[in-house]
Amino acid sequence: MQTGAKLPIHHSAWKSLESHAASMRNTHLRALFSTDQDRGQRLTAQAAGLFLDYSKNRVTDETMGLLYQLARESGLHEKIEAMFRGDKINTTENRAVLHTALRAPKDSTILVDGKNVVPEIHGVLAKMASFADRVRSGDWMGYSGKRIRNVVNIGIGGSDLGPVMAYEALRHYSDRELTFLFVSNVDGIDLAEATRVLDPAETLFIVSSKTFTTLETMTNAQSARDWLLTAFDGNQASVAKHFVAVSTNAEKVSSFGIDTENMFGFWDWVGGRYSMDSAIGLSTMIAIGPENFYEMLGGFYQMDKHYRTAALDQNLPVIMGLLSIWYTNFLDAHAIAVLPYENYLKRFPAYLQQLTMESNGKRVTLDGEPVSYHTGPIYWGEPGTNGQHSFYQLIHQGTRLIPCDFIAFAQALTPLGRHHDILMANVLAQSEALAFGKTAEQVAADGTPDWLVPHRVFEGNRPSNTILAQRLTPAILGALVALYEHIVFTQGAIWGVNPFDQWGVELGKALAQCILPELESPTSPRLNHDSSTNSLIHRYREMRSTVK
Ligand code: G6Q
Image (cartoon, rainbow, N blue to C red; front, side):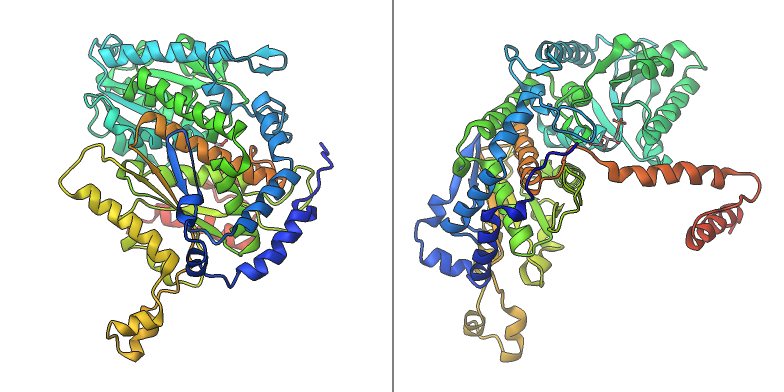
C-alpha cells in the first residue's frame, strides 16, 4: 500500500536540524548550563506520576523548536490519532494497532471494523480476574485436589518478555505463597531447570502464544505436558486442571487438550511486544491480584491520555522520542542505554530491547522505499549500580556517544538502612559526571602527575534523561511501559517506518525448519547450503555422536 508520504529528510525542519547540528556538535553541556541558569528547572516535564528532567541533553530551545517542527511536518499528531482511533496503520499486515484499547476505560468506544472492542476487552479482564482469584485463594485446584503453588508461563518473545519483566518489577506486590517461573527458550535446559524441584500436582502451566503455533512454545508446552502426564500415569484428564492458554487460536488450544473455557483471548490488533497488559499478563494478574493489575492499566491509560492530548513541548513520549531522533540522525549516536536504579526493574532493559528494536529495526519506509538515514538505535542496559562497575567506562570515556535514560524512585519499596540514599547518590552522580566531566586542569589540580592526566580526564558532554517517580507501583510501571511504547511510536512516525511488523524474524525461522530434518536425518543428508553452513551441519552431526 502506497501512502505517498514525504521522507523525513525532505521536511524543512530536517534540513534546518542538519545545519543546526553542525554548530551544536562543538557545544558543551557546561556552556549550555552556564549560559542558561534555570535550564535544570525549565527543561522538565511531568505526566502520570513520572517527572522527566531532560536538561542534560545537548539541546537548546532552538533545537527543541526544530524537533517539534519536525514532529508537526511529519504529521505526528494525525498519526497518533489514527492509532488511537483504530485505523489499520500496520499496513503490511493490514491490521489496526490498538494496544491502547487494552487499558481504555469501560465506557469508551473504540471501533474496529465497525465493532466496539471495549466490552470484549473488559469481558476478558473479568474472566482473568475471576481465574486469578480462584488460583490465589486455592479454589482452583490441581487434578489430585492439591492447591496450586507454582505458576509457569510458557511463551517466547512478546509472550514472555512482558510477563517476566512485569512479574519481576511488581514482585513486591506479589503473593509470596506462589512461585512464578518463565520458560521461553527451546533449549531444554530452560524447562528442565524450571520444573526440577516442582511438584506437578501443585503446578499450573500458562501456555501463552498468540498463534499457538510458535515452535519454541509448542515444543516446551508438549514437554511440560509429558512431564505432567508422567506424574499422573498418563491420565489425560489431568491436563485440563494444570494447563490454561492465552491465545487467539481456539482450535489449536483445544487440540492441545486445553478446555477452551480456560482459554483467555486477545486479538490480532495487539502486537506481541505490546501485549503485556492483555491476557498475556495473566501470570502478572495471578501474581499481584486483579486490583493491582487494574491499577497498572490505569497507569498505562494516564500516559496514553497524556500522549494523545499534551502539547508537544510538554509531552514526555514526544520529547524523549524526538531527543532520540536528534542523537540518532544528527549527532551520530547508535545506541541508547536505559539504566534503572531500581533492582525490581532488572528485566526492563531486556523488555525494551524487544519493544524498541523489533519495532523500529527497519530499513524501508511504509511505502517500501529504502531509507537513507538511520532508524532504530540499539537499546540496552542494566540496573544501576551494577552497570557502573561494568560498561559505564565506555559511556564516560569511550569514543562513542551514548545517550542514557536514568530511571529512579524517591522511595524504596523495602527501605534498608542507608541503601536508598546511596543508590540515589549514585544515579545523580552519574548524570552529573557524564554531563560535566572533569577537565585536565581539574585533574592536574588534584596533584595528578602530567603523564596520567589524559587518562583521568572526563570529557563530559554525555547526554542523559532522568526519570524520577515517587515509588515503583503498578500504576507507575504501566506509565513507564506506555512511555516507551509511545517513544517508539514517535520515532516510527518521524522515520516513516512501520513499528508494528517484524518480517525480519521470518527468514531464520524458515531456515531452521529446513535444517532441522537435516540434523535429524539417520543417513548423511544432501546439503544445499553455503559451504560454511554445510560443513557446520556435518561437523555437528559428527560431534554429536562422538563420545569424548
Ligand atoms: C512480538 C513478536 C514476537 C512474538 C513471539 C511469540 O511482537 O510478534 O516476539 O510475540 O514470536 O509469538 P506467539 O505469541 O504467537 O507464540
